[in-house]
Image 1 (cartoon, rainbow, N blue to C red):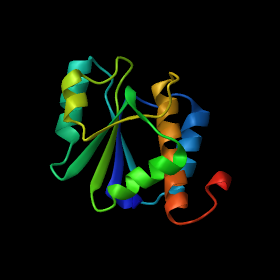
Image 2 (tube, one colour):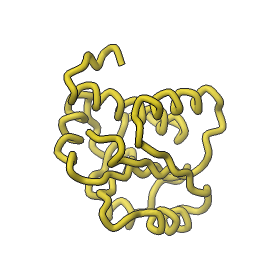
Image 3 (cartoon, rainbow, N blue to C red):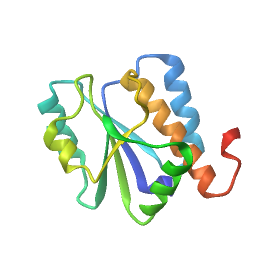
Amino acid sequence: MNPSRCRILAVGKVRRDWIQKGIELYLKRLPGLTVTELRDSSPEKEADSIRAALRPDETLIALMEQGECLGSIPFARRLKQFENERLVFVIGGADGLTAELKLQAQWQLSLSPLTFPHELARLMLVEQLFRAQSIVQGRPYHRA
């Protein structure tokens, strides 16, 4: 996984300082990975903002409750399948992503069957991206 070929589009702002510090920690470990915050609004307006921010050469990965839920090693293997593509992970707002945007995604991903605040999902995603990179590079992922 090449972090410089990945980015995250996330609806809303991170309001909890400890979550922001965690995100910043992993972003330092993943040079090139960027997070773009989009304005919180209605799902339809958020979808418009997301579509406007998408680049034509990106593979859309939608984070959603009903998505595929993988452990860390299968997640790393799945990301490796996309190693030559530009990836954009999309985290919707409180009401989630629109049905159209979900269908547009090449991969629908769930971080857990549990429900988390969206800002915490952002932290969990960057941590799992770092862990996936460690796994792919053969470093001990359980010490990430």
